[in-house]
Image 1 (spheres, helix red, strand yellow):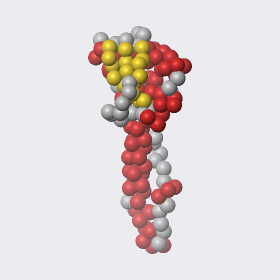
Image 2 (cartoon, helix red, strand yellow; image 1 turned 90 degrees about the vertical axis):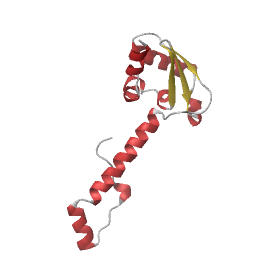
Image 3 (cartoon, rainbow, N blue to C red; image 1 turned 120 degrees about the vertical axis):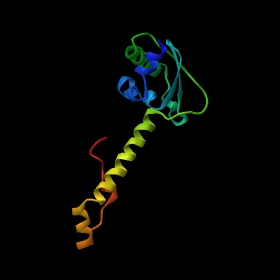
Image 4 (tube, rainbow, N blue to C red; image 1 turned 135 degrees about the horizontal axis):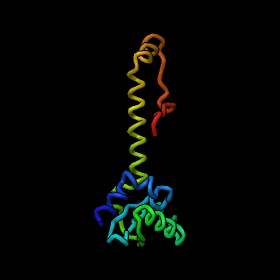
Length: 129
């Protein structure tokens, strides 16, 4: 059963299952038992910790896994990446790919070579995010 809990709230599901919580997005989690999870919040986001935020997150996790889950807060450094950091890296990768794709586009190359055009890298955004 513990195995299925980890599958339900995997990195890929965390955002869709309980990702509406800023506390969830900026924390790592450790499953202590099926009914007890420990969250470690990134230091610069610890101001988000409140009894109400914890209760709402407990309710969201409990709904996602189908049974009650209590949350405790861990101290110390974050040992893995948070859902927010994963999303930011994913966006950075998409942005880099979009810039590379546009720069290698034959029509863009023609404009650069023929008219001395320049790409404004700051204006490029990926279509998928």
